[in-house]
Amino acid sequence: MIFVKYPEPGRVKTRLAQDLGKQRAAEIYKGIAENVILRLSKSSNYKTIIFFDPPEMEKGVRNWLGGDGDRFFPQGGDSLGIKMLNALKQVFINGASRAVIIGSDCIEISEDIVSQAFKALNVVDVVIGPAEDGGYYLLGLKRLIPEIFYDIEWSTELVLHQTIKRLKANQLNFKLLKTLKDLDHSGDLSHDIILKIQKRQTEAC
Image 1 (cartoon, rainbow, N blue to C red):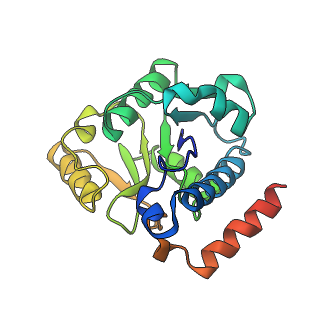
Image 2 (image 1 turned 30 degrees about the vertical axis):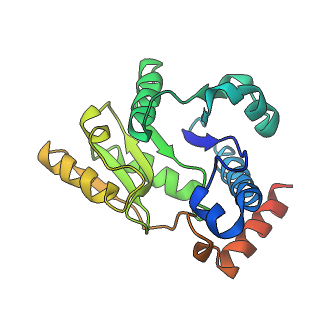
């Protein structure tokens, strides 16, 4: 499950836009999201579906990303936590035995990392990919656990800490994957990351 936002200037990467401007921030997000989706959608080990926001931009998202029409679903909810919870409810109701959610702004994520997450779910209740900013870039579950989506201070450096605390309080076992960097500020755009984006854009073509 890949969460994406339609790359409209001013509505994506607002912190990055403070440094680079709304248009440039949207262009960077668009390029990274396209690369993440293209790379992770090629695997035969799992099915990839896209949950997009805002819901009214369905036509724009389909035109942007293309592909099979049955893999696009709108995000629903007032907070990121509720949006993830509702998306997980949908896939589990439709028969999924394991589910992994990722964002679309982590250039370092790979098919191998996603496969590691699915493998870990054979043993643990929850798998998390920690982000350097204190959040997480990946969350994997094999059943619905609503407790980890409520009363979390989303989009802060406390997200991972609060989530782990909630898991421990509910006596749920979990595994942490390698820590990666999300793209939030212009300082995250190292020369190495820019080269990776360009390289992967070329590979995707």
